[in-house]
Length: 175
Image 1 (cartoon, rainbow, N blue to C red):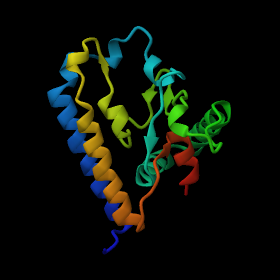
Image 2: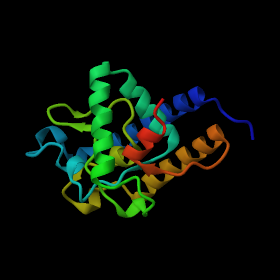
Image 3: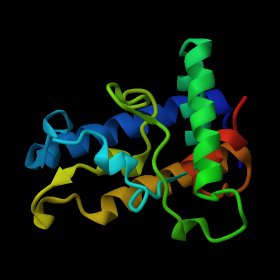
Image 4: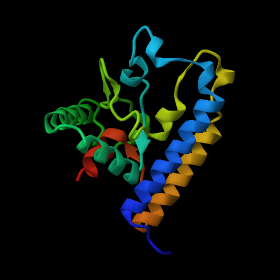
């Protein structure tokens, strides 16, 4: 198997996510409540009993690159928040991270998701405030995208890459 350069893989990842975001927006989001009209904006992202987003190494690199585009002071604040989330919710222990939840450090009050346009993970693209369960995107759509991204990670790094809780992955793959 010929490996892809990380830069080429990041370009492909951006296209995969953009296409998926368009598919969700065109087929499902019109049935969801807009985040802008939510009485408690960010409640779903900051709900420590709900959030359990795992991302791949390549997604972590893309998000870290997006963070690096911000002013240094803002970067420092974000990484401090990420490290606090890891500690508060004990995300770095060897326990099964799929059974742990946390408040997302990428949400900033008054701003929203700081990576909304530049690195939003697949589970977050899929998620919206649907009042009717029949309006939700089928789980298979998200699973299909995650499988495509897993394959892209394998073709980039030469071996399967484990998905990690978003905060842990961001620290582990920070450049």
